[in-house]
Length: 393
Image 1 (cartoon, rainbow, N blue to C red):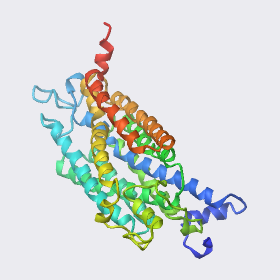
Image 2 (image 1 turned 135 degrees about the vertical axis):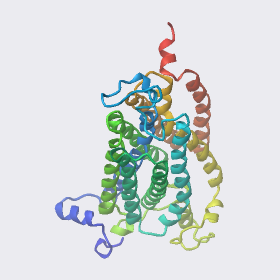
Image 3 (image 1 turned 180 degrees about the horizontal axis):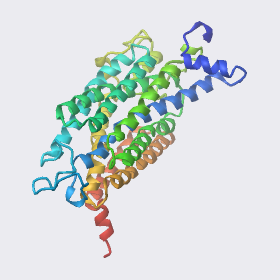
């Protein structure tokens, strides 16, 4: 074991140790629990700041004929349907323009996911992740600033989304790499299922925060989450320990199927399993082509691609769909979108438990995705609250 005095420790950890010098705990266990907690909070904050646009879409473009205009708004035949919308989303092409915002974010998010995965294995994760979170907060804030400053430029909003997508991509590769460094032999399915609930909890919190302000001042729907992700980034800078050797903890024993085995961390695990493999240096980060040679990477990547296609459609458009297909207000639509994420928490934990018990992770994944197919058709046919309320009448 490495002496902690001989390594660089984050300043926040140093302060905690000075404040609690007499507390005696198992160092390995304490650090691992702490890493699970702080990474959980970190990715919750990422998703919390990612959710507001889906809620705010309803007030950027809405049916103004159902609302009462304030005294200072003059209603004419030309603006009676658009006076409450936010230009340039007050025309018939509003949904198309809103789709451009989503596409800008997701294109940069997907592209820079490759870049972030490459960088995450080659730099100090604490600085990389903290920078990504702080900058994500900045660009989320800049989107919200459009309300108070009266910014109606589509170009401005698209540029903000481009940068936001780029910096949001720093989260997943960094956090999974960090967990891969800390956890070796573990019941990875249930543990990862519980830990992975952060994204759904972030979505739920994001929907509630955005819903509180969406009808009165939608700028705060972005500004509050921006502050939360920024503060979380500062906490990461103060406290994150990227690897056990950084604080003199025991390095986990890696093996096939250990916690954190993914497209980002499996190469590092494989190097420790088989030092005579294609990557003889266990400290050497893997190349893109090397990662593709790992069994199952391409298949699971394609599976995740199509699953994310559906998931992000719900993430970005479910409140808008509920508002358009029911009589629910923008705030109510935000809250009614939450059960989807609650189901995600339950499904993720259940899938992890089943995978651990059976050892058949691929079959578990395929089975749940298979069940999702008819569920989507059922939601399309009966998902409208109005339709459900009319059943039996």
